[in-house]
Length: 108
Image (cartoon, rainbow, N blue to C red):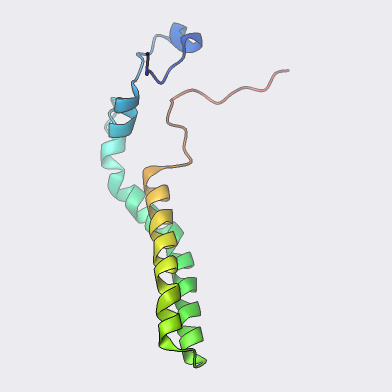
């Protein structure tokens, strides 16, 4: 079984095939991915911070209105879990194209 990221259609470009293991480890032959790891973390934090702040503000508002603190602590784990999941998704580039294929051109 061939686990390369490139299909046979794009083999004539002269680029080497990258395996799935290479994509997961980030070894794409460029130093840009290694140097931008800190930047991805900061960018992920900037993207997730407003949602985390809204969730914590909502929690403080509910506790301020007199909600039983037990209920407040019951909604805290989902807020933190979704924020952590979003941070991981943005940090790793979940929605980015990892195959290296150029954008698909529209037919004329």
